[in-house]
Amino acid sequence: MSLKTIAAKIFAHRIAKRTVKWVSNPIETQEKVFKELISKGSTTKFGKDHKLSIIRSHSDYIAQVPIRDYEELKEYVSLAVKGEENILWPGKPLYFAKTSGTTSGAKFIPITEGSIKEQVKASRNAILNYIHETGNADFVSGKMIFLQGSPVLQEKNGVKLGRLSGISAHYVPNYLQKNRMPSWETNCIEDWETKVNAIVEETKNEDMTVIAGIPSWVQMYFEKLKENTGEYVGDLFKNFELFIYGGVNYEPYRKKFETLIGRKVASIELFPASEGFFAYQNSQKENGMLLLLDAGIFYEFVKSDEFFSEHPKRITLKDVEIGVDYVMIITTNAGLWAYNLGDTIRFISTYPFKIVVSGRIKHFISAFGEHVIAKEVEEAMLVATSATDGSVSEFTVAPQITPQENELPFHEWFIEFEKEPSNMTLFIKELDLALQKQNSYYYDLIVGKVLQTLKVTSVKSGGFLEYMKSIGKLGGQNKVQRLSNDRKVVDGLSEFKKQNS
Image (cartoon, rainbow, N blue to C red; front, side):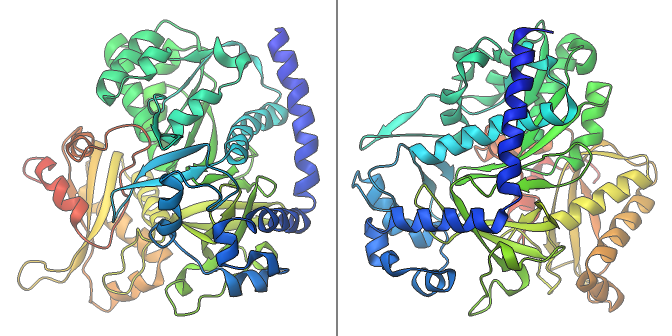
């Protein structure tokens, strides 16, 4: 056992003891975070505009600070981007995380010294928690790769800006620097395909033990490794033990990954975003992720089916229910106040508070009143692939409101199959029934003959990658939108359909 392995186990034990303290006192922990945020923010322009200094309770906060998304907070962010101080948080942000906006181009999410420290701490603690639970720590002596955006940062009015993953690359601890892959030069390559090919060359002869990244982009890396070497990833990297991922649900990719790896490996799910690091998987024996309550973030929740009402009810942790989909509202030590992250979550436990990500409040299908969310289509896909011999690389779903004459409307699934089912009729039947079982509104629409059974359009091999490249979103933190209420995504995918589909 190496010194690094011994040290990792000791450190993991220490962190586990600290975690127990706030897990055992969740409401008090959140109340403390809330008071600290209000106190810090009261001296800023936002704080003065919203009278944060008079706030003594959550009800006061609701009265003074409305829920906002990025567009509604943009007037304050713009002042910070111009270089003004004390706008959303004391001083200037340390960074701006540049992300793709849906309505107004690039978004600039402020990151402060306090918030980046919490991001780094959470990433570290997720791995240490795994070590403490499993006793496995030998992997810390091997090579580790984190597929991420370029760490080259620009500067805007005295504040550095870049992708979150690129910013995070500057915070790899010294004790991991020798283990980190790829090289700095390769990591700085902007073109994703060129970068992945370079990573393959640098890593194929190394002892890779930990691989991390968004599943769709790690899949591309694995495919190129196999194409380059002719070996399964698990044979090439005999000590590959741990896959760390976030950003999307891993389950639709799991079967393909195990095929590419040639065996099963342990995995840790993370819930990071430019706006903060919210949760990580804390058990290999149980589902869900532990919501981080002491990380400079105060959480509020609004039931998804009430969110678009005139006065949606905002609740705190003490009032949440298991099994309900909530829009997660965050207030952070980066100066985001009652901020609508856009993600929907579902609690699967309240002691400790553990969640799963169920989708995006803006990404759903409700063209006919069904309000189908990402979690439902992903679970339906798992049922259908398990019931047939098919396997799937990627998919997205959209409504078809204007079908051919004498046809009912339907949901259209654009699917890139790794292996097309030998019985497509059975596959479609299982897919549709699984969705009906999860969503009573969809069931009623099918039974009431408002909708017909879903239809599948096959996308050619590599079609989703070609589509993402065509819209300038190949690699990095970009993800395929799982479902939408219009046909913008599937119309773009149409040119990549499989022939005779």
